[in-house]
Amino acid sequence: MGMENQSSKVPIFLRSLNGAIGRTAVWVSCWLLFEVLALTVAIGWFDWMSGAVGNSYAPGALLADLGANFRIDHRAEMSATSGYAAELGAMLAFLALIFGAFTGGGWLQVVLERTEGRSVRRFFSGGARFFWRFLRLMFVQMLLLAFFGWLLYETPWNELVLSRWFGVPESDCSRLESLDSEALVRQLGWVQDGLFALLFCLISSGSLYARTRIALHDTNSALWAALCTVATMFRNPIRTLRPLALIFLIDLAVIFCCGQVLSSLEAGLDAETGFATIAIIFGVGRLAVAARHLTRGARYYAAAYVSRDLVRPISKPDPWKESIGGPGGPRYPLGEDDEFAAMVRG
Image (cartoon, rainbow, N blue to C red; front, side, top):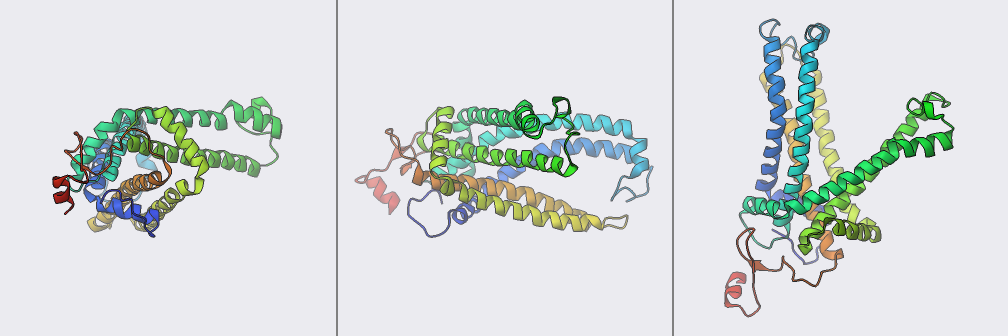
């Protein structure tokens, strides 16, 4: 496995998916770690629900729908539990972002390093190796998203688009009651959301390529890597974005199929539903989440393949040239006349 410089007629997105699938231990480990985070919130809801239901309801009566009576009887407790879950979820979401910076370094260590075996060990050593650099890059990405969110949803949009273009008074910018039709209000909302979604995809793709550039050159400046990545993507928009877009479409297709299966199963839930149906619903949901971690690894493979072709090498020695050494430790290049190199290659 690992990166190969030889040309191939196989599309990059297929090679990337194949590479990620081959690292089963890596993406399964990422999936299980994120499942533990989700389980933290789920256990709190399960404990509360067990105490609230108790023996007061017939078995299976609340399986498909909690019902109006249950929601009214427990509205105070549900509100408190929801608030607690929201606060805990926010903290876990931030922890997931930090762990995402760690897993990015792990994936790139596995993708770029020319060695076989011990993928999980090399994954965690790579996560530690690049963590602080990728964490700084993550904050740059968050600042950019916050800035564009302010442009599209706050004062600039209200003054430049709503007030000057559509003549909406400043007092109505939050409600848009002075516009001609409700359809126009919906269309403006779609434009806002569509522009932000497009910017989010571009910034996320740029962050992915910036991480790959940092790992490829083994440099430290997150800001400089981001600026260089913008220039590279501007000069080569199709080559950089096409494989990521195709992987994203595969991701959407898997989620859509899983969603259709879940919808059909959940529509038939009633008091007679057996354990097998619940287990299938649980399994399909977990499959959709696991597929996201697999395609995330494929994106790093794709970014590495593209960056190998587009990013010019720097003057310092290539840290990923053919070499030997322990994961995360010093590496020793294999020279052409090295007897040990001949044995390794042979």
